[in-house]
Length: 265
Image (cartoon, rainbow, N blue to C red; front, top):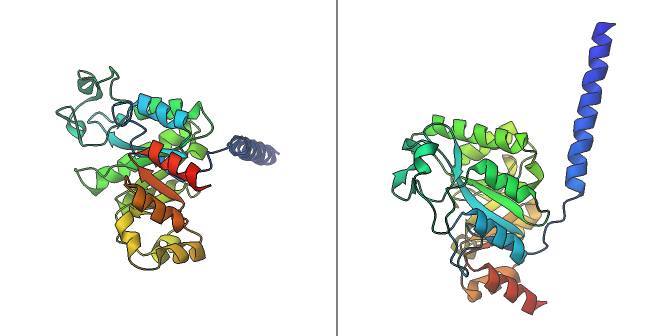
C-alpha cells in the first residue's frame, strides 16, 4: 500500500512539473527577428560589453536575443565576461571577492550569472544566448563548468529563455546530456550539419564566411537545423544572409540590422 502511494505521489509531482514547464513556455513571445546582440547592445550608448545595462538595452531595442559569455572563478562562482581576464584579473585564478575590487565603466560589478539570468527572466521578448567559455585548465574543468551552468539555469527555471553556444563541442554534448531539451549550437565552424543533427544539436553558429562556401542554407532547412552567423557588422553581409533566410545574425550593430530588416519589409 505504501509503495502504491509513493508511485501516485511521484506521478502527481511529475505531472505538475510538466504542466508548470508547459505554462512557462506558453507565455513566451520572443521577438520575431534575426537579431542577436553580441555581448548585449553596448556600442551605440557606449555601455560595457556583457553588462546588465547592455542586456537591458538589447531588450529595449527588441532584439530576438542577447548573447553573453560565462566563466567560473577559482571559488566556483559563475560570472559574465567575454575575456578570460577581467580588468587585469584572471577570472579562473581569482575569487569572486577579488573580482569585486574592479568595476565596469558604468559602475557595475562583473555580473554573476545568477543575476544576469534573473534580470533576463523579467522580460518575455528577448532570448538569452549563453556562451560557455572553455576553461584554460582543461576538459575536466569544462565538465564542471557545464554542469554548474545547466544546474543554475534549471534552479532559476529559465530554461525557456536560454539557448547554449560554445566553441567546445564536448561542453555542448555535456549540456545535452544534462538537459536533452536544451537548444545548443556549435561555434567553431569545423563540424558538418549532419553530425550536429545526429548529436542532437539545435543548429550551427558559425562565422559568416563559413556559409559562403557550400550548400549550408538548403542543407540546414533539409535537416531542420538553425543557422546563426557571427559577427556580422556590415550591411552587405547582413543583406546577403537575410536573402538566404538565415535564422539568426549575431552583430555588434543591432540597431543597423533592425533598421535594415524594417526597410526590407
